[in-house]
Amino acid sequence: MIILLGFSSSSHKINIGNNYFVEFTEAINVNKENTQLITKENNGAKYFLDEKSDFLISLNQEFYFKKEIAQLKIEYNGQEIIFNGTPQIIVKGLPKGEQEIIITGLDINGDLANTTKLKFSTIEITPLFKNDAIAIGFLLLLLAIIFYTSNHKSFSGFYKFVPALLLCYFLPAILNSLHIISGEYSRLYFISSRYLLPASLVLLCLSIDLKEIIKLGPKALIMFFAGTVGIVIGGPIALMIVGGLFPEWLGADATEVWRGLATVAGSWIGGGANQTAMKEIFETPNALFSKMIVVDVLVANVWMAFLLYGAGINKSINKKLKADDSSIEGLKEKMQSFVASIARIPTTSDLIIIAGIGVGGAGLSHILSELVAPFFSGMKATLANYGLTSLTSGFFWLIVFSTIIGVVLSFTKLKSYEGAGASKMGSLFLYVLVAAIGTHMDLKAVAESPILFAIGGIWMLIHALFLILIAFIIKAPFFFVAVGSQANVGGAASAPVVASAFHPSLAPVGVLLAVLGYAVGTGAAWLCAVLMQNII
Image 1 (cartoon, rainbow, N blue to C red):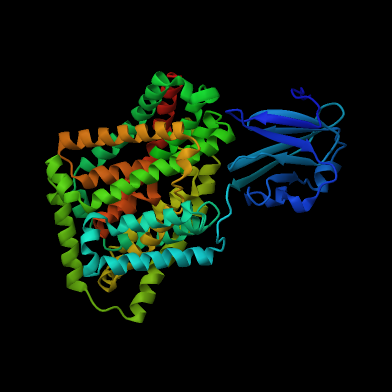
Image 2: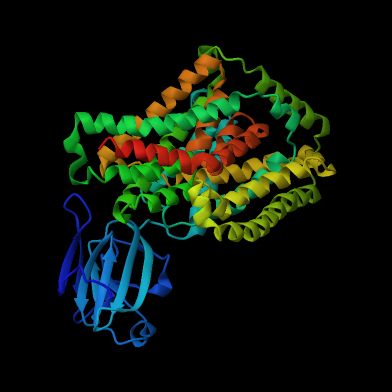
């Protein structure tokens, strides 16, 4: 028997924070031309709020005919309302972000008759171009312009201060911020991270020298864990600073903010799987979670921009840190000598074989991931007890297997294809990924929730200062600072990007540390969340 906590009404508003309401209303004489249709069959769909702001919930006939339904219970953002009968329902005032509406049919006794879950995304503004073919055209054109000008004498002064890789990241962000294209709507990031990134890792690992990487010493691990500690302590300190000095800034959501920040901690230490785990563990409301995704992406991307810029001036930074980067320079020189010794002008056959190695390796990684991830998914509850929910993520295994395949192939004769440009093709794939990551950065988003961005900014500053302090103490070069940080904050999608900004041969270091981030992410994020909970 279900106890009805709501009440019957033809219209009801749900407060999702800061006096913002979402209204659910019985639909009478529906004009479908003025509404967008939400159905179970459309789960995962994306809607633009500026096209039509009202949404009509449409349930299939099977939902109603299993049992006689007397009431509909609507669950949204952790709250419930009840409608008598089986009316069509209009939803008004949805905010942008990830949405989840659970609809339960109750019989005349209040017992469960049927239930369904609607999951979809809402985007605030329709971009000028929605076609991904146009979007990828813009991105590749920008990359071409950047690389053409970066090799032109007329622009040498400009690129002396602004790294080309930073522009590859920042210019697509401008296109997204101006709503010329939409990173939220486009599938370019998904395609780049799931297809191009694994292929890139295979090709970049093809020429890997494990002995030389091992010679880099323990500083890489020390800086990675320093980055983790910086995130764990940074969240509570940032929340304490803002909450203590300006408690009114947090508004009505003050007691809930830490739940949202817990998901940011999960993302900044482990990645998407750890972020989802934090959302479930601490029951973060969907409306708050959507805001935190924006904070997570924007703050992390701004920090990545600083790291890319730092990669361009890392020699001067190393002097200030009094760091010995001889091991890194030694690896770079050895790789350059190796490539020079086997370099040749690539033929069409060479390029096709290189593409086959990279894309074929990525395909094999997908096969292995699809075999292994479901096995661990069956043990999700047990793994959660040990903070190892990342093992259930297909993306985690995709990165692991593509790296392993590349390393294994580096012991074969296929390694000679480095001389025909294997790492160059891998770098091309990475640059496309960088541009796709940039499209998820909305430079105007800060105005929507400035206090949350203030917390995120202070948090990231503490993380950065702690890393620099440890680097200064152990005289670690900036490479370890950048990669140790990005292996935490950015994960496997962007850690190799930052590492390769120093040299393509260093990309595997970023991957290995990012995989370690997946392993410690849930436990460290949980600790961070508990500390934040005790502050509010």
